[in-house]
Image 1 (tube, rainbow, N blue to C red):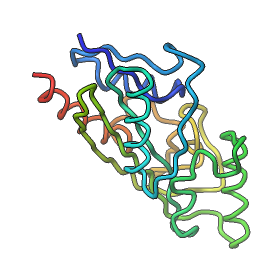
Image 2 (cartoon, rainbow, N blue to C red; image 1 turned 180 degrees about the horizontal axis):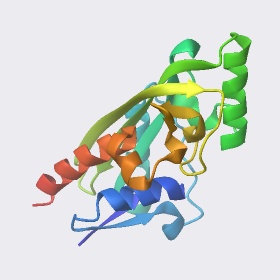
Image 3 (cartoon, rainbow, N blue to C red; image 1 turned 90 degrees about the vertical axis):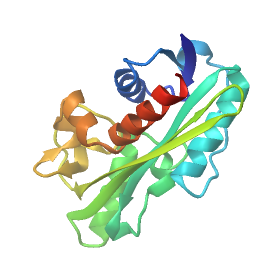
Image 4 (spheres, helix red, strand yellow; image 1 turned 120 degrees about the horizontal axis):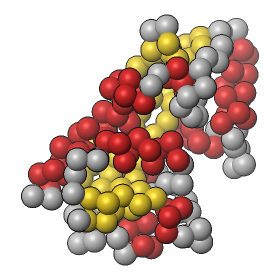
Length: 197
């Protein structure tokens, strides 16, 4: 069984990835399982795809193991695509989900808006120890609103609506069916199935 490190310490992402790849002959371990001491790389890519490749290569080198890295975020139409690649650190380097959501709501309010069309995007990259690379992308279209609903999910999920439900109200199965990460993970599972034959 192939050991693959997931380039994140985010428990929500780890759960979603383990769930998506449970039928594959791989053992997924998170960065938190390996070492607390690996310094995070500077994510200076211009796109989600750039950043996920950068992270996958970096952590593959640091751990000596095959690596799976995602870069994902929110793009809000009324904010010209912001926060985009800065989604995780939208409110600064010490950003939290709460401070990011507060800034997002603030930016909409400044424009006299209570909602805006928005989309989540996810780029996923697998880098093997021999340098082989697999990449997929996924999208989820919805709307950012000024009312938080639900206590599942993470990040911007309580404010991101698909229909009348926020992402934070969905079960893991429902979320995986429609989410940007769910789509990227399904595509990656297909590529890995072939790759690992």
